[in-house]
Image 1 (cartoon, one colour):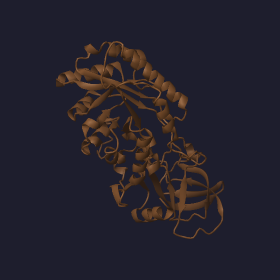
Image 2 (cartoon, one colour; image 1 turned 90 degrees about the vertical axis):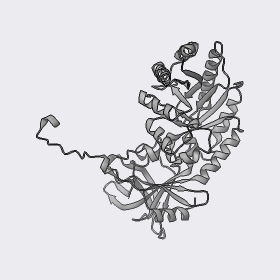
Image 3 (tube, helix red, strand yellow; image 1 turned 180 degrees about the vertical axis):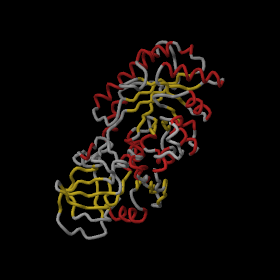
Image 4 (cartoon, one colour; image 1 turned 135 degrees about the vertical axis):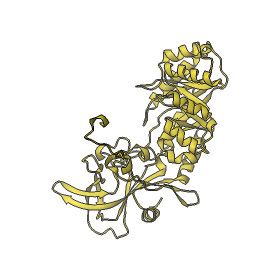
Length: 403
């Protein structure tokens, strides 16, 4: 989008706001499908940006849900449950029952205990549940290699589970293709091992490669789809026979379709430097790797006035009463003024839900969706958070039995 369009939107709809360009997103999805030659299925990890869910459900094969709250979003939006894979490190009995009531297509099992719980609840329901086992890559996620082999070896003991595949996620912002080759070697080896004692048709391999995206000055933006092209070449080396291979992505889909719009509320000089203060900060904008503003995101300074005056370096900060609220440590701007706007690009993923939004009880930003016909829809209006940060229960603090 050009500066004039963004300035008009910021002026008309107010700030702080997120703007998501659905036309840009559609173009990227089309390019992704062409690169993969329509050979591999696509899954959208909705945690990257749930406000794009309605659009994405018609553009990919499957939606990954990772929490009870995300499932409730899908239920309220009437997302087709046959297009949902329900992941998540921990699933309670209530979570599993809610998913089964909604007739979710597939559940992941992230531990032997979780697999037993799913089987027990499915038995109570008198149904068989499609389950994929998640292979651990690091940390608290998934099951170890030997536990997965054991589970498949003893599949007949899980009378109410259909073992339909494997799930593997190795991290985010990964740009080293040798690591992705290692992932696929591990998956292929495990797939071959379990196929020795159990046969499957349409076995599902859901792989989340965590492809990296560019966000900051000095990053390489020459080909933002380059890593996907490299992934395709590696995938094509493997003979997965009749298996279904599904690529799970989140940030890689949506990062580039988003903007964060904020207004300059103050410009000042202190003993240690020059500052631009915005009406939004780290409670709204949280670029991966941008700690205390040490990396500079791609951004624009928009003004209705002529940019007369000299250029100099400013720290760009938010409105929070904490020294941590630094969006950019140093950026050269030309004569920034109160009521000008700063627009941060590449804000399509995570920031919309990843900021410390309740800190200091600031308002939540407006969410704007730019349609293909250039119409703008307000997906969420400004919302106050203060009512979440106090108790409306009138306690008698002199009565210690109530404390």
